[in-house]
Each structure stands twice: as C-alpha cells, then as structure tokens.
Length: 261
Length: 334
Image (cartoon, rainbow over all chains, first blue to last red; front, side):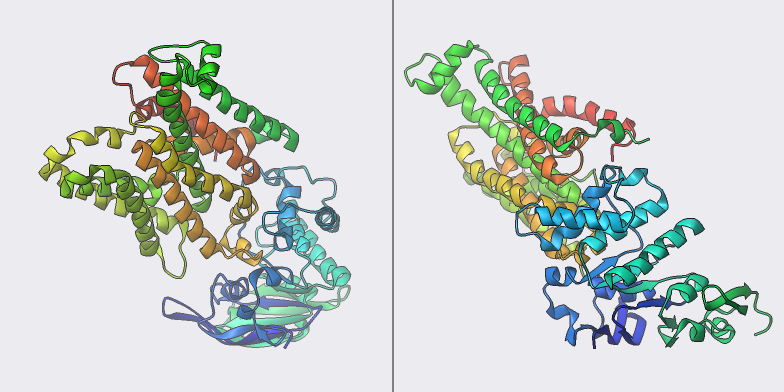
C-alpha cells in the first residue's frame, strides 16, 4: 500500500471515536474525507501528524507503519496543515514559509542558498512572491491560508494533508485556496488528502471521496457516486436535489429540509 | 495596523541592537565595580583588574567583581529560563515560578534548615534539587499522553500552593531555625564570592550553549504541537528537555542569590519588544538584558543603602512591577 489506514481505531480516554478505518489513498490524486461534525475526521488526520496515536491498527506509508520512519524523514515526504494555526504575531510571510525547511536543516545550522531558492519557489507557487516581507497578521484570510500552504510546499512533500483548509474563508478565498490545492496536484504531483464540509466543493475538486458516519466508513467512491440524495439523507439527515454542473462536470447539490423520517 | 509594523527592524538592525546590549553588559560591569561606598575613577578600576598591588584591588577584585558577575549570571540564567518557559508554555506570563522553582526551592530550603540546621551550607544544593524535583513532579502530574501547556500551568499552581502551605507549617513550628533565611527568601547578592561565581558558571555556560542550538526548534514549537510534530520535531521530548533545562538554570540562580523575582518574567518581554519574537534574536537579547538589569539594580541597591544593602530583588520589584503593569496596559504586547 502506498499510503493509507489499516484497521485504524482512535479512542480518547476509553471512548472509541473511530474504528475499522480502512482507507487507501491513490498517488497523485485529491481524496476528500467528508462526514458530519464530530465523526472523527480531524482525529483521523491527526494520527498522521502523530499528535494522536491510533488505539488499534496503523497508518501505513509504502508498506511500512508510519511509526517506523524517523520524524524528520517523514516531514520531508508528508506535510500536514492543521485547521487552527498559531504563530507569533510579528512573523512575516517569508520567515513562516522558511520554517517548512526545518526537516532539511542540519543540527544548529542555518538555511542554505538552496533552501532559500525553495522558499522563493513556494512563495511563487502560492502567488505570494511580492508579499514575503508582509506580516502574516496583516493579511487577508485567503492570503494567510496560502502562506501556510506555501510553508508546507517548502517541505517538498509528496503527500499533503489539509484539515478543513477553507472553513473560515469567504467564498472568494475558498475558490482561491482550492485552486491552489488543485495546482499543487497538477504541477507538483502532490497527493492531496483533505477534510471538507462543503459538498459542492468536494464534488468539484475531489478525485475520490470517503464518507464517515458513526465512527466508521460509510462509503467511498467517485464524487458523482458519493454526492447522491440517498447518501446525503443517510449521513447528514437532509433531503436534497442533485443537479449536474455542465461546465465543471460534477454533481451540484441543493440541500433541503428533511420531509419525513 | 499593528504597532509592530512600525517597530520592525531588519536583521542587520537586530544584530546592531544585540551588539549594543552586549556593550551595555561590559559598560555596566565596569561602572558598577567602580561605584559604591567607596568610588573609584575609571583608571583606578582598570588598574585594580590588572595590578594585584593596586589600592582598589581588594574592594574591586575581591568584593565587587564576584558579586557583580554572580548577579549578571543570575540575570542571564533567569532570563533564559523565562524565555524558554514562555515559549514552551506558549504563555507570556510563564516564568520560573510557573514550573515550581520558587516553591520547590524554598520548601527544600526551609526543610533543610528546620531538619538539619547544622548543614545550612547545603542550602544551595537543596535549592537546586528542590526546584528540579518539583518541576518534574509538576510535569508528571500534568502528563497524560503528553503535556499540554495549560495543564502544566494549572498543576504548577496547585503544587506551588501546596508547598506554600508546607512552608507556612515549617515557619510556624521551626521559626527559631529560620532566622537567617531572610536573604534567601528575598533574593540578595550579599553573600556572593568567587566560589558562588564558579558554582553558577557551568549552569550559565550550558544555558548559553543551548541557546546557540535551539532557536530553530523553539521557533517551530511556537507554531503549535501539531504543526511542529508534522515538521519533524519530537515535541514532547523537546518540551521535557526545555522544562528540565529551565528548572536547572533558575535553580542554580536560586542557589546563588535566593528567590530573585521578576527577572524571568520581565526580561523576555522587554527583549521581545525590541527584537521581536524570533528566538534567533530573542535569546541573545535576553542574555545581555538580563545581565545588565540585575547588575544595575543590585548597584542601585548598594548605592541607596550602603549599610546592609537594599536587596536586588526589592529594587527589581520596584522597577520591574510598574514596568510590567505598563506593558499590560499597552496593547499588542502578547
């Protein structure tokens, strides 16, 4: 298996919040994990960043358990962007982005010329090449999120995990960030795994969708298979009309109040 | 607009500021060895350094210099500890007392004096052991699949309160043994001789050495545990290491000068205001500021009250507390 979860369970203080999670992520594709609030999507991603240890099963990367890799080696190959970011208030974008080079640094050494080239490329990729000296805190929501993504690009990962990357953004920035994520897949061939709450964006940007419900995987498939009226009813408890977006060739959902149980 | 927008300096300017602070260390040392009950001119002071026969030799070399160097090093150790802890706890109110150094050291100090009054010279060692053991106890109490800063701060408060109660009990029942502990509790450099200097020197050197290698790790840690973990930093191990280091640094300073307040809290704040929060600049700025602040405050105490000396901790609190309140009133300081 290239990358995925093998019978993973997650428990907090004896309470099982995820079990029997078997997922396999295809190289070079965008996979989106969806599901109701509190179904454990974020916890699942946290097992990859190793903040949360699986209570059973394991995360597998190239047929070996994730835990068998040295942390810095892993950080050069798998990047992760949590939902909530913390940073010093006086940090500028370039400094933040350069922190993505941390796994490549030797003990006690500074950044090399090559490191700074990678930083420049990452800034350009995220469309921030002229904003390097701006303070992170003075940016718009979309620019901030692009700066954080630029930091993960700096890790030069082959897999990027994003936990609700567009949750706090307005619709303009949402499109902007998702287009950047798509660009990472197309140009840098990065395998993307993300958690989203927006069904229409899920339908439009994903190659594959995993749906979680009640601690388990409810189903998986292409977006046009997963974004269906039946599944929306079962998983989210809503009725819906599913239209087809002719331009983007994906389903489009209009949510409705549930009529009868 | 953030106030930092107008206060930001380039890397070159930050280096310049740090170089100026380093000069302030040297100048404050020279100035402070020459003033006191007997004051000397600059040339008399310099002579005392190099000529064992000079008239000022006894006072400058044997009395004032060790005291001032000890004070400076106490300042360095406490500032570095504060700097490290404010980063580790991601809380700008963290200081050596947050991890139980104050309560642990004073408890062990009291216990030693009450139970083994004949071994009062073991007080410094007892203080270091007490603060380190208390820190580790607080860490373990806060531990549950890793330690969150908030848990650590809360369990630190609880443990400190408990030790405070023990201290009161010891004070109540053994008050006759504790008559000489005023200096220890208030924090003073009165007893500092060359021996004290050589006792604290290894801790300070280790602390400064650490600061050459830690800035990038500290900066990463400031992005939160999740981010730091996924960048390849073993956050839990690193945090334990830092807490241990901070405890030893501040424990060593307690052993030399007793409970000196405010340095560990205020110096990192001032340093952050003038060079920003990048640890590459924050560590050296804190080192030099901590040194200068303690040396100058101690000298002020010596000059104001030549007989008996106003203790450095009192001067620091008089200057430090209003300044800290001023920082709190101002916005954008966190």
